[in-house]
Image 1: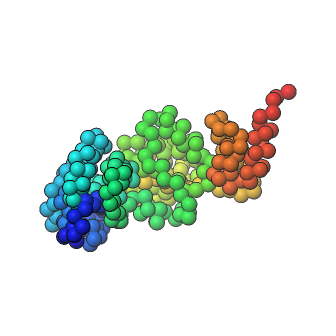
Image 2: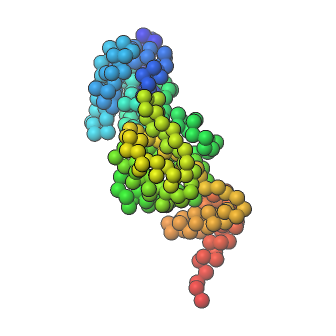
Length: 286
C-alpha cells in the first residue's frame, strides 16, 4: 500500500471507530499510514486516533464550514498524483458528516474514489435493535427547531419501515417527546446511546416509556444517540387508515396519479384503491 504505481491521485473514504479505538480495520490503518494527506473533520480528534495506532501522516481540517473552500486545493493535489484519505470524527464519512462536496467534486473530476468500509453508528444500532432491518429509512438529525421537527415527523407517520434518527444530548428529550406525539406514544422504539463506548446503553420500549426513562435519569441524557422507531404495522385493519393518511398528505403537493402511486410505494396499499379514494376526495361537497 505504500506506493502509487500508476501515479494517479486517489481519494480514500475511510471509516473510523465510533467510540472504541480498537474498532479499526488493518486496511484502514495501512492506508492512513501510506497516503500523502488525511483530510479530517477535526484534526484534534483524529490525532488521538493517530497516536493510538502510530500514524504520523499530515492532517488537514476539512469540515462543514470550509469544505467548499479547500476542495479546489485538494483536487489540485489529487490531480498531481497525491493520495488523500478522508475521515470524519467517527464512523463512515458523509453519513451525517462532511465530505459530500469533496467526493462529488472528485468523481466529477475523474479522480478514483475508493471506499474503505468500517464502523457506522447507523448499522451498528440497527444490528442490535431487535427492530425489522429488511427495510429502513435513515433520517439523520431532525431539524433543531420544534415546528420544523414536528413537520418532518408528521411526514414519516405512515412509513411502514424502521425509522432511524441521530440526535444530540441537547435535544434528545425534546425530540423524543415530539416523536411520541407525532408518531404515536405506543410505537415501539430503541435508544442506542454512546455505542462502543464505556457507557454504552441500548434500551427498548414504547416511545412513551423511553421518554419517561430518559426524564427519570439525567445521566442517560448524555452522549450521542441513535433512535430507532418501528414502522407502522400494516394489517387489514390498519392498512386503509395508514394509506388514506399518506395519500391525503401527498395530495396537498402532487397530482392524484402521482400521489396515489407514491402512497402505494410507501404503504404497500393497492394503487388502484388509492386512486379511487383520491377521486372520492376530489368530488365537490354537495
